[in-house]
Image (cartoon, rainbow, N blue to C red; front, side, top):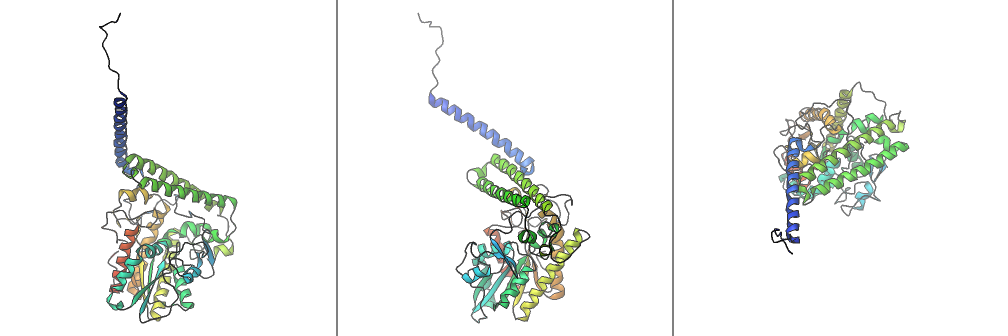
Length: 443
């Protein structure tokens, strides 16, 4: 007999159950995202971008060992060169243009043959510097060429823009590249030297700390000395970690993850862990190679009482090298223009976006530490070049000062295509004015 007093409960349909589960998941996900958003903003984005308000010239404690380099195997993809230190390997380097002459010179990122004589119809403009200058050529070639072509005194001449910049170059490599090209019979009407970061950020950890004179190419000891197993293993691990960091950044920047605060937090934590792991291995390399370097690896004997003296010497070398480039161009009837490249670690140089704070700023890095010591010295040396020697020197430290958008793409110095276009426009503007002997307006 059926008990009619028992209430009847209708079975829940599968559709309703699925809807309930989906709504619950959305609510939970929303709560997690809300909590992540609060954590993101309260913790300064939980990124390594702590301390962005530090002033230029303020130094991290000398005991801090987090550093920018060496974060690569310096012998991979390059070959030693008797005059330039090292160049890109013509057999393995990627090809930008079709100039086999440029490839065999070690400058494959060229759309023109670098060695050419003077011409009334063509204006040869050569770009010198490190990877920042090299990428300016790669990513803003059209903008720089067009802007230079519009300058009145260059009217009627085709702009032949050649690249003599290469990743990791620092003075006197730019000076050597200029003299090498001229010695081979090349001609340059206008030389543009865009540098400063490598001369400041590389000498401590990649030269002096390894027992190598700061005038030698970066990580020279690691290029020419026999490396022990600890160093080789640390380099391999650093290369793997750098690849992991690039993959993490790419993943976090793709849709739909780029809008998730939770993904930002996870990526930020991964970023911090990788940076710390790289720093530990860099310290291992310095310890493993801390013994006395061979004459081949060390170069001239040197001693600095402290790091201030070392950075004074580096700034003086940079100044002398630039002056020699200026005098060389003046002697041949050409023009020389020297630009100090911008950097995110210069306080007040750019309002950093959340993406830049996350991916392009490490508050306790060796870059920040050494930029603080080195850049004020370069600014002073550059202004001395203008006032005392008539060199067309311009500081581009504030070229991004009014830019809110994301421009910096890594935690050392490089920018995106939009950033290099801004650089190209600034360079052309100063070349057009061709002024020297007065303070630069973009200090």
